[in-house]
Length: 584
Image (cartoon, rainbow, N blue to C red; front, side, top):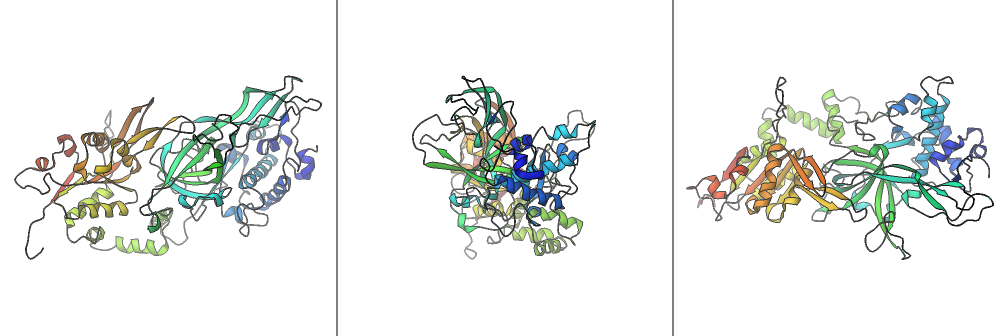
């Protein structure tokens, strides 16, 4: 069997590097070997990408220190990977092409790895750059891929494709070690062999790879297995589809679609329930059996598995909440940067003023930016904004102004500089609208929830305390307990509109106390003790007891709400339906 470098010519990588990116079964103590039989066409793909990396301007300024500083993760704009002869993802070809997306990204990372080793300082190297670079493999984090693919469009035709989706995190599973290769011991010849595990699926080797040995049963040695960090999160499509600024009537009234996303190595611990993620990854499938167990965790059985589950193997993750004030915040680490490859990241359109350039991360067009500037320079700005809130309801300007201020919120304060134990003051304004039926309270709440960038609308008579706060659920695949976010956590840094507030039971009212005052939700269930952020403005609407508001009674007597809950509302509006023969 020819050596990898011999098959690839002079530009072939060292055998140990080839084994990092394209592993094959090997015997411990012998050099790794590979040929076109074991890796069909990958050597040709590597040679093509090596020539492109050598001539591409994207990697011209990349240095070994950059890869080490970014924990072996390099960010690359998808548009830069489509330019030039021999580019990894050419515009004239589909992203699947003749090679899988993982093969293209692994071959590209290998070509960049070899180039960085070539420009390392020759020995003696006091910083040991070459030895540190050869210890681990590189990862190419692709970002800025457009257009976004709606989660409901991820079907069987998308398997193996590179997609970009956006959704709200509703569940975060605990961290687990993911086995990438297993060491086996031959009981006959005592040879130690290493077998890679594709996608974490355990498979018993067919036999001993040592020449002359015909042993069929090998003993696994789990002490020397190679593992990496692995975590699974579940995202749910945001209201309005993949684009938060365009209404999508096709998804109205449907159950929101969900999708599992698998994070590994530097992408783990990048989110909490309630965050909004923009994920670039590869759609994969995994077989499942009748009891819901997947191929990784299902017990050994001879039953045919004809049912598959779709999931996304994440390549890069961007937490849009963490990057609200910094457009270039990438989640290849918990505090990663998007200016990976020599600072090549998305730049705002030229010609915009500095104040408008910061809004380009919202995906606004030039016409929308100019309209915002014209509105900001108008004289009666607040009156214009109030009139834009639910224009289908006539009047009620004061109530609309209160709902607008509650949606916008205030500026958070963390206490005085000289305080020994500073006490933070909440910035969210809680609003309660009480009134007779038919006054348009539900219409105004629905309009505010649709208008807010992060708005959640729930109805009090169909809501539970767990649906408002946090639920501890058991993963049917792994068996681990995980947190699933409720309405208040999903509306973090936004607003939560609760209609029929008076129909809620005492348990639901008690669940709101901590979230409305402390802006957090504490949980201690199933061995999980934590606190989640719930910086949410509660905008509620309630009907008085008896159907009509009694002006002879106080607000508390008309609502029969607990005093501790009623005191947490900053603004309280009373809408009365006065009979009028001319107006009615």
